[in-house]
Length: 84
Image 1: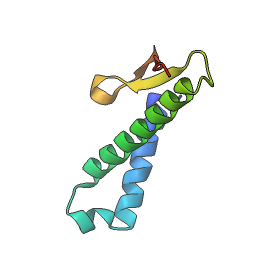
Image 2: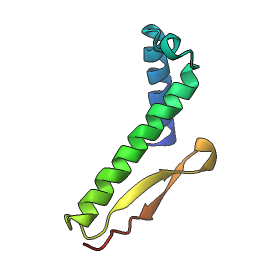
Image 3: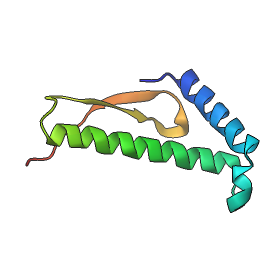
């Protein structure tokens, strides 16, 4: 689980990489919107993988990091698996 400071560092590095390669120009979308989109995609993928692992019974209980409102800090919640 990453800290708030690590998340900010990642976002800044990603923004720098996008700018270095002028990725925002292709879609005429500001870099901060692309960074949020990519972060949201990574969060959705992590959630899907965690849900799949619970469904397959590869773990009894799994904690998932969820970002709190406003993007600061976070909380850990138990992920409830679906019945097969």
